[in-house]
Image (spheres, rainbow, N blue to C red):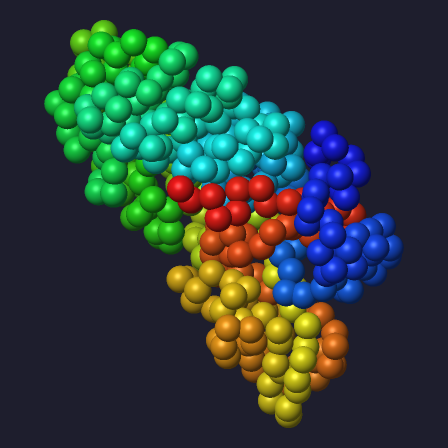
Length: 384
């Protein structure tokens, strides 16, 4: 876990918040999982460790490196568990997340969003100068130029290739070659490989359809790699992939490093995917709520729009159907005979884990029914 064992020290100013003081007083007390001030993000430590071990095993057997995407959890304590499980480092989406995690002691970080603009390039260069083993991605000569202008110490670079998502990346092999040539000509910049990520494949449920889509994307990535290789550019690192495509990524054999993120904690979206790998993962992230009202057919809970991501349907409960009911409340439709009474806790599986965690300052870590630790979410809101 954390290199700082006292959670009060690790939490800093957060430890003085009244609700967090209440949670700290519950540590190590049996049954405390059900007394945490709500709404609260909960991590089941046993399930989390199982997921990390599962990924380490399947990737280790295939000889593929794991670089988990910390944009999912944004938490240094969880990142340390991933590193302890064999990860070669972590990914982040933005330089702001890299700054936060580096400040909390995580130093091997890949920034997966390409560098664009002087402000972001300046901060990436400052991270490298401060001693972070930071690798950045670029997808246009203009991004290379501004990064080179800001760099004062060596920075490793990957060329981002568009594999069909259309969101970022050099659009074709010739464009990738121009980016690589700009990197080769820039002082302080060293090309280490390529990135090819297909976010639009991650939730394709049907296995043959998913395989076909990923194979086409890897064909595009391979074409760029072959051209870069012919011109003498380093493509040793070939990174990408994700939770939904991990089995296909391994089977196709193009990527040397995989970037799963949601696998660590899971969510309702990923549980809907057909595949032995995804179905082997356990739900480790929950949102706890308190029952604040009850009628014959529904319960009111204190977790509404502010408690969950809202882009991927409703939260899931095994005792009824959740309905959005405002910023602060939700409804749980239930005729469950032993349904919770006023003041008791219920837990929900969030629809989308990454932006759900981003709503919380800390994660409440439980083993069984006992609260055992509190982890700050250092990179919460660090999307700059």
